[in-house]
Length: 102
Length: 218
Image 1 (tube, rainbow over the protein chains, first blue to last red):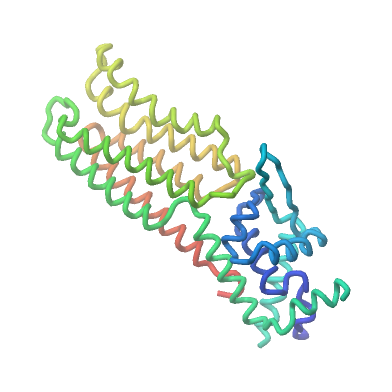
Image 2: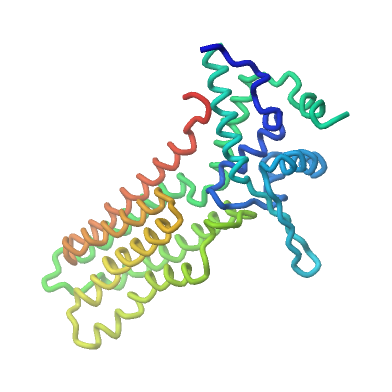
């Protein structure tokens, strides 16, 4: 079997910040979501950086976010979609193949 | 800069080995952070419940007929029960902060679990006053019944969410209740202490193994 190259890794996931976001959300039980502030606490990104990377993942359909208002406060929750979970599985398999060939 | 070159810039020289390490570390750290049942806390609770079981067994050992635990040991169980509940809920709440969705318990499920634990204790005095035997009022109701009821309730709730580990824990707790019922009012207290200690230590071990499980490779 020919060895895989890093170009075959999904570029949407193959970046430190986005990999952390996707891995964190994938560690939740299926069907669960995480608040924006807890996600930020867990991965240690600034709000601005987190928003930029979440937007890229959301545009690709890998995560979905929902904003709910409760009086004066609002809560943003983020969830890994089914296609995001599958993309991470594919990425993990590709990574295994590449590292297996090293 | 267009979207594709943006992504390529983000990926930069991100080495696959480094990516594998980030993926594993992030997954393991998240699993640890969001786990409502801390393994060290389960271990402490397991050892404490073993101690409570032994103390109660020593207080009823040699009773013929069975009259129930002596009043001097009851505050120990009450203190343990209250502290256990407070500490467990505090850690669970902290771990699940900001997590919503399917795995959250509904109010009806919380009420069912609370009732499974509390109702048998509320029935103890009325049952004793109704002329039932002391072993039913002061052993079957406070030990096997809540273990079986709460264990099965937890197993059912977890099974509905397809969560195997908590479902297994619930079934194991219910099994300890059945063993206590079979062991009878004297040996049953010791069986409760040992049984629950084994379940809690076993659960702690399973959680630790799950948290350390690799994502890429071993």
